[in-house]
Length: 257
Image (cartoon, rainbow, N blue to C red; front, side):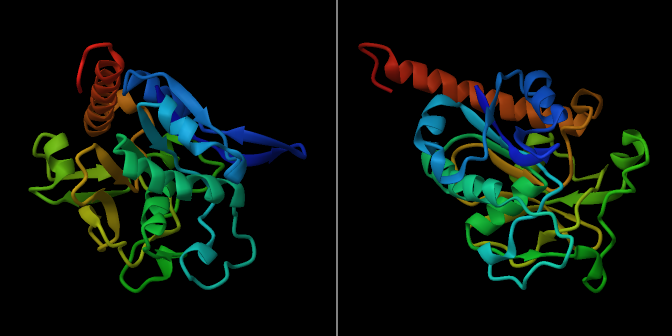
């Protein structure tokens, strides 16, 4: 059972808890798990019950941005897409899930949430930082194949956790659909990959025994057609199944875990 974080969206004036279909299908097809939506209810959601129910968490990407009030950043510009209900849900969910040692995979906004939850800061407009690329997605009127197409290379730390998961691979091309990115890295996070312009593209948590990987690109898109994405989600699914077995062994009468 893998929890998939949702956004709170307004559709025809009605609030919906929503997660992109490609995240849900990547959990099913890439991780071989059962996706369970985690609604953006903030304080009205019993996070402890959620964490007792799931064997892993997928923190999804989103068009919305983490509110800068959570990391001491300047007020956002007019037109910024915010989701305070998601912030109120995912930031405390990150902290509680890490304490429990749950397997976690985070994508795009999910990686930014991790950095903020642990005390880091964000660039609100990466493309305006000297020397950086424009990492934003192509226009929305273009086909998905173009918007999620190859954008730039990432270089992995050769001895890092992500490089081990990807069987020693250290450089490949990824898509890019983000306007924000990590500025000051949070204490306790380790850089796993960077873009050619120095933008942090993947991190892990120092000292974590569990699978905890966060990436800035979108491996969920056509997960089975990309070898790096397929390996990443397969490793995540394996970690979640190991967590399931550990919990089952602990609950079995007469067994000491």
